[in-house]
Image (tube, rainbow, N blue to C red; front, side, top):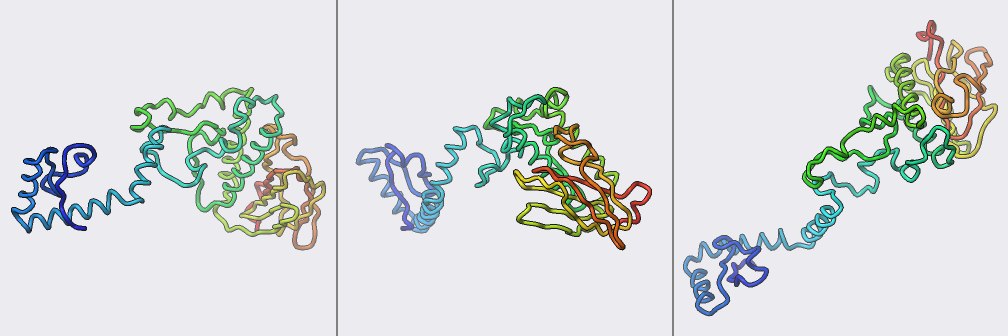
Length: 304
């Protein structure tokens, strides 16, 4: 209502009434209450100023929006996320590997053949290749994502007592050759080497195949050809892709390479059929795989 208040020091009012700014606090007895009323009547200009302050505070601090935010903060504090960036996305702030592999974080030995792990790692490598091949001028990733660290990184802040325990990248996982983390790191290294060597980010992308039913995507960029089979179960033994290159491309990287925890050799499953102005690439595609082909080193300037 835009009026200042005279409130007693009993209970809640003492926590939000600031004497002389939006009202007065008095003791719960007649003489003190009378004093507060007299103070209100002493200076009407000051009283109206306090009333405006009180009204603004009520609208600012006692709205349902503010109450909801304060309640949310209580829950954030209880789960140790006080001061952390906010998002309505349930998986924001988490590494992709946690979403794909968290429930199987103790089944990451190279000898493990858990289908959930195989699916998660296949999707992870395929998405890494997609991002690296469709990006703009460069790609940057968070430390630990190069070998699929599953645990989220939590930087020191007030809510976790400024502890650095959860901000450490567990590089020892990638150093252990008996774990799949090592294979994922090898794939990341191979991918980065190929991107640097072939310099595909310097050219525009041209889509060659985008088959929703087969879940196959193929596109050319610079002197490179990228082929993805995103189908969860279907394999294709002789998938034909017309490649508009003047030089026959050669396989240089595949996500299902045995070195990276897959089941294929580095150069298996592809053959080239020459036509007048292009090449037909006939390739075998396992489910959830990505492949990279490139013109031979001496002929890359002749690519598309």
